[in-house]
Length: 316
Image (cartoon, rainbow, N blue to C red; front, side):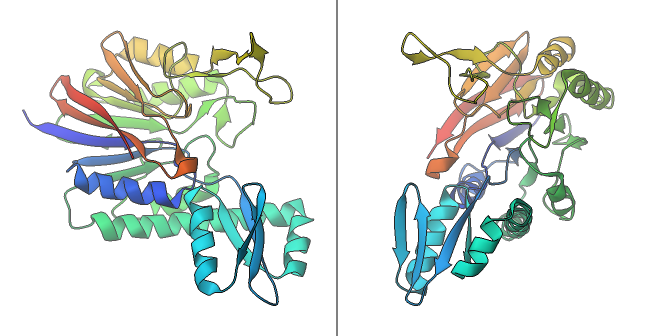
């Protein structure tokens, strides 16, 4: 009976720094399997205007300037660290793009897809030649246009919607779909659809009790799915001077875990709910996310036969 050591992270949301830390941590902790569990793309553009002398932008609520190309690259790195995409252009071109929602959306997609290609290439360069199996899957925030890019690598695997063999004993099924959120994300679906997706995948497993459920949405009513309640304007509901915290995870995910009792559940989606909780015999983990600070939050998990031998959170 062998041991399999895994690194699981989620909700990188386009942070260049966090993704590079994921690759470095995979080697530093000498894992056999490295998994990114969804929401890998960034959410917005920062326009950097090219002036007659240097560059100018507004970032994090204040004006920022770069006097030359070296300072420009430093500024872009800071933007990318926080999961945003820097677009450098002349003032007229920026105004034209910013005034057209369609052009802005298409430009954001271009940056997203270009970055995913770069990340896949980087993962191949850093991890190829090692024995590490690398799996990178989309989450509910991620546009479907990135799937062909994730599927194109002969080294990195996109496990979404598939049964993936991790070792001689353990299989993993994955889905980036999530129960519907207030933001109506690309892969938000009804609980019925999510449940059907999970059941189809579970039916293809050889042994559910030795399997890993890599589902982006956490199970409902656990420590893994606690988030602030929002009103109709997407503002936190305040009670007794504090944000009112509620459970926002998936009922279908919880039912599937209760029914099939996999060895391990790997989840993300709710950044502030870093936690471990058992549902029956199944250990469920959400490593949380602090991608906006360029911090890597992850979980190192060791599997041994029918047991989760050990687990620990990493942060840095």
